[in-house]
Image 1: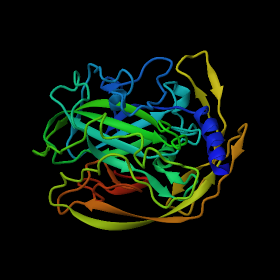
Image 2 (image 1 turned 180 degrees about the vertical axis):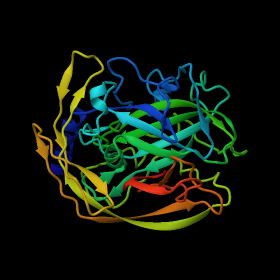
Image 3 (image 1 turned 60 degrees about the vertical axis):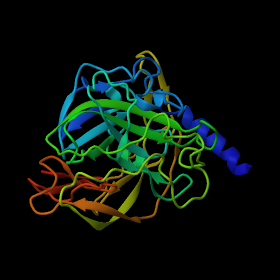
Length: 358
């Protein structure tokens, strides 16, 4: 009972502290603007969806209606979806957590083949192309959201190279678990993007329907973040790994030193006149080099958490001769499952979560 009471208090604090929106798209590092993004609107734009039985679980509230633009994406290229607390320019800084308030949980990205991305309502089958859940630890542990925060809100995904060309919806999702110990407590932060895949092959992955694939009692949705655990079951289907041509799978071991970093942020609602100050917990900044800069920003209330170094092992798909990530594409980082060589350029480490062909 004591642990559950502490969880309720923690969730109450976290729930009042931060919301967020997936709101940007880049293709091979080039910003695409907002014309092909179904951006949530209104004062509650950065609020979560909590009912997995609702059609809002597809593309957020109002997301069943398309926008006019479709962004061109070559098959096999890297797209970057980006999250921030609000649409305010002041919230785009790396000093402001993409999603704060101890909103720990997995980050997942789905795609859906459609005939016309501008009119599709998301009712077709979705296949998963990216997932990063629990990285290490427990109560609460280090999660996909922490990796996203450490990368300034950016999540990099390789579009499978063998996908059939045509229009697709891309669905980016964070599942915040701070209140998931109670029914309908998990918070889903969702945005859909409209793209047109060029080149590619003929693959048409099977998928799952939303609503339908998620249930309120699924282990990865009904989850107590504030207890002991050594693994986490990602909700939904497994990640689609096809479309890599004559690739092979290798195992790469990455040692990550997690340094303590104190952060603070001001969370702004979508109405300019309203500002709310949040208290934050410590997030961890990852680095693979001995030289590490520790950020310290004054906060109203800061809890410091020290994490010991950890070793993360992951499987990475590596292209064979003549294949690899395109120029400016991702070629490595924690959780990365795409190519680790470059068809053009040199794979250059930006941080522990992102290496890029330059």
